Length: 489
Image 1 (cartoon, rainbow, N blue to C red):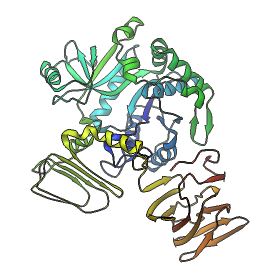
Image 2 (cartoon, helix red, strand yellow; image 1 turned 45 degrees about the horizontal axis):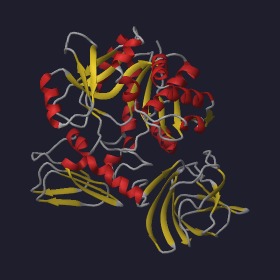
Image 3 (cartoon, one colour; image 1 turned 180 degrees about the vertical axis):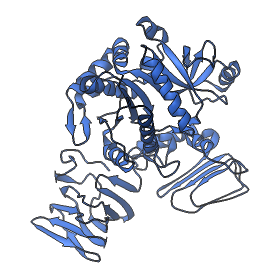
């Protein structure tokens, strides 16, 4: 049977703010080393393919706003994708998986799906690959759903739990009795003591046809909306653009609530849920304490990333992105520095970081949305300075890339080339600029910047005008298919 890894990459990771932002969420961030969580997940797909020739290229479901970053990160690690399906609006994980299952059923063929979130971390990947393939072999011979459970080591209150009738190490898959919501500490302690519970990892194996059958049984609105959205989808470059109106009509629901936790109802349609125990150093990196627990500690249970010095500090996590950070005489803290924001939180309150993000949204601030460095399909820009009626940016354009042909109603721009060669279009003129040369783009002029060279183009842009927002862009032509999109920061 054909096997397709399905990677769900639609989350915002608000509890890992300020490193994780809405337009650059945690799965795209290099939290644990030189590769992002998404890239690590993609490389696991390659390891699966090396062990089993039935494994196809992965299908990713992601937020439309993340599409170029997802494609770029896959390209950076040399992983070919089966499809990148774009969610035009957020509708939680059940509709996202239904899009993937409908796509596989309609465009490929009925397949076994390995469903992975894009933001989990695995220490023992060899064991994880073995357990995944064992589960696939067992599930492919039945109509069952194989859910991966983690043996609990502490009474964790942040995970859902899977109850089994009896833990039997002699069988590959064990019968699931029930699913439990995230418990309070006393109940979690009871679960741990009983020995009949696993943490719910949120990863599982199910055939595409069985998922479609189950979601149609339990939520016809999700099934119908997603089926129409895929049937009316359009191919755009490397992306599958589902029909926005059809998909927006879908109710919002999670995979667990919509299907997986309906144990008795699933049995009524001939589908049983089995748990496959995992012992591979798994974590979902849901909040900063999870990141801290995953990484190597010093003798005082501290974890540091970046340029950090500690003095008389215990059980504290410190992350520095750019600046030197020193901590003295503190304990049980999370300290996270980024160029435009600093978080200081008790480890015991770290789950509530998302409340800060909500306050930022309500006040209309952009720190929840983007970093100071913003990535675009052509490269990136970073705000260096700003004030009343001016803004200074550092712009990097990748070799062979070009910005859209655009115009601004409220601002003029000065461009100074720092490194590389720039091809500039301003109204009817097109010309080249080299290092230390500059040009002026008046308000209302149609203009475009391109990099015809083989090395990154770096320049400084000085904007001046009454309004300097990123939504003051009118696009006339764009090689990345964004000409008709509303512009967001």
